[in-house]
Length: 418
Ligand code: DSN
Image 1 (cartoon, rainbow, N blue to C red):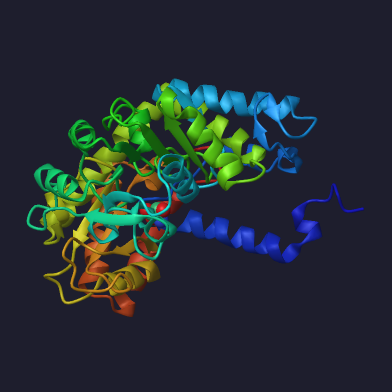
Image 2: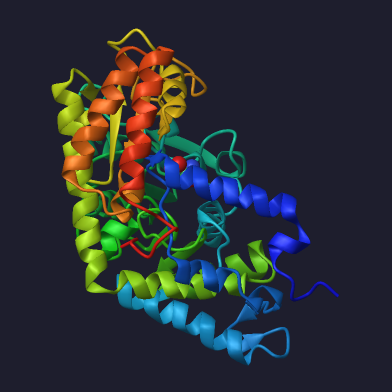
């Protein structure tokens, strides 16, 4: 019986891969805007025997016996989400952001009905109605973008399109929009056309929790999110809504879309929400934004264009159209130096999403490691050097400096993580 043996003994191959990935995370500069480093406490909850329990249904209304403990766990996750974001109702079961979105849409729309979200190529998200995603296949999707000259959402254009297209669901939220979204203005448009208003706050949920980004909860009928980006919890999703949508949302998640909830992940969500309720998390969010702003300022000084000219959030979007290389080339060159970013389309991008003319760079993960503005200036210079001359000599020199920098901010090898 190998039940109680550690991974190292049971499956050395997977153990080694986990070790290698942990080392990769320790050694590199993680600047992918949707990533973060969660705490040991969150991972302990995720790696617990709660994974064994089936609990279809909701606390005190389950289809299985023996749910008295996981009921308490799930209720705590719900209570903490509500304490953090102040909504009427929370459903903490969605396995990820995509599931949260699809089940939320199906709570208020019939297949074939119209939704309107921001185009992926303009900073929206695949699940906001892209034609290859279920959100664009099941529903009749129309997409708005940003003003290509300013990189900003033009609420006049959004309103005009909404009045013309009359979607039943209006979606705000983004995965590559550096600025604050005017939720009150979106809510006004939704009211004018009698649409349900949904905000996907996955990217900036941690900033909302810390009070550094306007809360969508006061304006939206439904708010979807992930727990693992700026919010720094386990990989997962959740939905907040007004009282009147409670039943429809809960029914859509289960039995509509999912089966047994992942109670080990829900326990980890509760831990993550609990951490986000601590005063230190507020300071963390402020530092995330200061870091993104510093990174953007130095890159701009070094000759890089930023979409919208800067950022109010955790990410910047670098526009490479005036440079002679693509987002794909940039991502690859920086990756060789241990600097991890992702290629991203910029508004009006002539290149495909596989190539792109942009780089999305975010600071949630490195801020968790304890890095501040001085390190961001240094990293902007690393990026400038590699993108300026991506030859082996430069990449090797920068790699060595990256390693030296990351060694000063240990991640899981010590308890230094904030
Ligand atoms: N893929 C995530 C991101 O990087 O923004 C969103 O799902």
